[in-house]
Amino acid sequence: MSNTLIIYYSLEGNTKLIAEKISEKFKFDIIELKPKKQYATKGFKKYFWGGKSVIFGDKPKLINDDIDLNLYETIIIGTPIWAGTFAPPIKTILSQYKIEKKQIALFACHGGGGAEKCFNKIKQAIPNNNFIGEIDFVDPKMNNTDVNSEKVLKWVEGLKIE
Image (cartoon, rainbow, N blue to C red; front, side, top):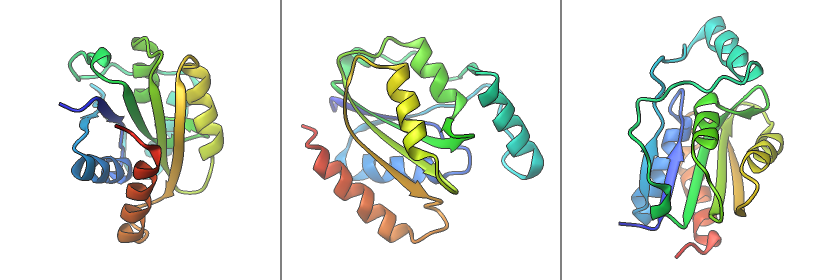
């Protein structure tokens, strides 16, 4: 078992692509967050329900089993950016678990910006940690997956995770 956990939520597969690249290369444990009620993935409903969930601070119930975060020194958190912040399933985890004294790395996928604001909101939600790095990707499934794969692997190597 690794002392590093990748925990992520992915609506359309972009965040999943990046998380799985990291896990494959570095053999870190990986958990995909799965809400009990799925979000729409297309059209107006996708933006309406996603935006509404963020604005109202939703913390959707997850079907994931309890996670023992005490097993990990480092946690890599991956999220799509919704309305300038992290996705509601990430909010569920950040509020459900006491995440302190960990090394935290953040990555986000988006279609057009907002990463710095998103990362700052995560840091505010779990302040008593050592944030060791952050990186973002623009629609990695559609935009040059080889370049994005190389980019994320170099980033993780630079984090100096043991």
